[in-house]
Image (cartoon, rainbow, N blue to C red; front, side):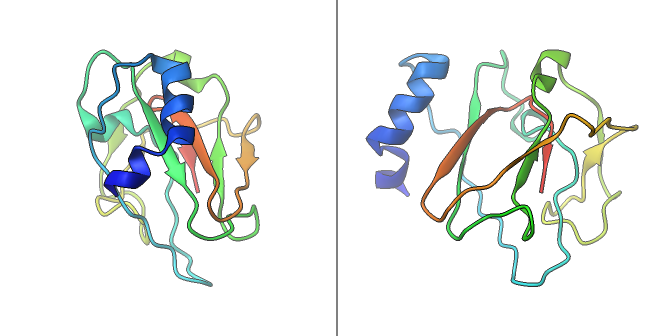
Length: 133
């Protein structure tokens, strides 16, 4: 993990977004087995970190191809500007998030965009950006 988070491609991209003062706060592995119905409902990663100010990003690395058909990430562009939204635990059965958390209330997902990745590619998103998979 140490060499992965220090990879120049990742560090350079993160630095472009938040500057050179970079700290890896945590790492998490989400495993979705083939044909699994497991999901991650709409959520914001900042909910789990407890860090302020909100000057941080999540780097998501695909270990296998992630497509719209098999559950790639889906983002709501610009949603990070809306600030932290309330979340509630225990509302999503079969969630890859152990707490089964999701955003409280309705989420307008019409402007959502899929972000397919090939194995080895990564995406970056603001920790307040609403996303699901």
